[in-house]
Length: 117
Image (cartoon, rainbow, N blue to C red; front, side, top):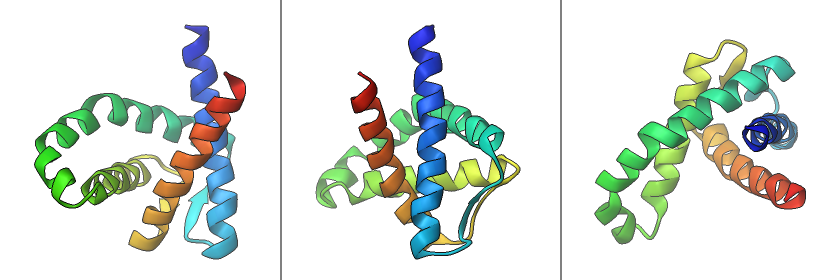
């Protein structure tokens, strides 16, 4: 249970770091209101990644092979966009910041989890 809580906080921190990085290149297009919003976004994204995302990845597996993984990126982008639509205070202003945010969030989250473990 404690490990789950640590991962949740790390993912919220990853959201905030991602916002800072994306804001440097695309100002104002990837916005989080505060840390509480980042916590809620991390929770919702975690729920989506543990329920909906595996089903979508299973259904699109042949397409993933044909596109060399790009459809997997598209699924991650759609999940992140859904979180931005669902969580008040979290806004993504278009597909480019969503793609960049998905890539940066994956990298930052992986690095944070790697450093903690």
